[in-house]
Image 1 (tube, helix red, strand yellow):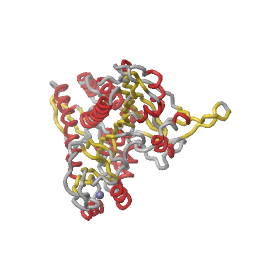
Image 2 (image 1 turned 90 degrees about the horizontal axis):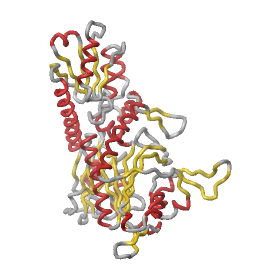
Image 3 (image 1 turned 60 degrees about the vertical axis):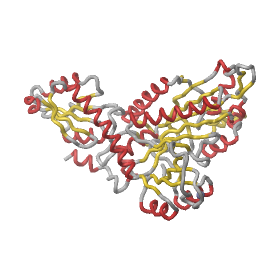
Image 4 (image 1 turned 90 degrees about the vertical axis):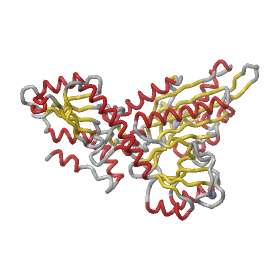
Length: 476
Ligand SMILES: [Zn+2]
């Protein structure tokens, strides 16, 4: 059977998770490889997901006063050099333009790996008085980082993202904005993407190049590896001092601005695949899914079936719905809907029509439900809400079952030798311990979770009194 074969074409998750991921990306037609090494084509099915994520985030940003702008994709080397930590952090993965119009450039241009420096250059020109603050801008664009190893959506040389950049009159305001945007990401991931996250602060070692503090939302994938899913940075006045962004305050005193930046990328698509997917392919939460419902007419050549399917589509026009009336077999259509992660399939055939019902099949748990055709819109709305909620709960239960706690280095090593997941372990705050853990166990500190600022106990590495609770894990 054709439908059986289509399902068999994916490697099982338990057998080889990396291959399963590649298979899903390919078979669900999310992206394709290109002649440009390390860069991908995001295909219509993948781009439609990105559009859903982008539109929702854009709406949520604007509710907090964010305005969109667009800055150049090139950064002159002289500008990039201005903030020392920042340039050191990015130098190894920057791509350079050295020639333009067949002439060598005197100041070579880098293709933006991120746009802090350009935003600083811009704010220096438009911020003069306290009346010009705050500046709360965001841009949707692509950036280039010359990665050695690439994987679809997770790591590619060019990727899509948004980068918000703000400038404020006070340190308090900048800190509040940093936390506010982290919360926007956390709510978006949990409510919209059905992905539970740990919110916290990065250690000095893991923070962004040039930042005073980096906050992160960390999610756990099906295979127990962590994925940094969004970050928000407080720059203090470091960039402002390097770039000379000053304003006169209400007392007519010259002050430096305080800045933030925050971003999420097309990695989010990778997170959705790896948190929700299964051995039949992609599983999309209803809020994310470009198509929420696929109506499959059964015995569609029989009188009245296609008409009833069209009627059903009309009834459900408030949802993102399509009818698959192609000449493929129903089994093939089912497998295709499953592979693409469409949350709900509705089957309707002559017997259903006679009984005044249809059959709804849930993608997330495979459940099949007979639904009366009267009040169908209400029933489907409820069902989609349930799927969204159940997917979050299932992901959370899985995350919690893959979260462990270690009291000392023996336990810590033992857990990582046997399992992959988050391990909560107290830390003395010394980077030597963090370095040792990374070197010996290939594990990094993911974050110091909010709400555990005061930590008792002893360091999971050296046994000295601990200062911070840390989530440790293997990461993508
Ligand atoms: Zn220690």
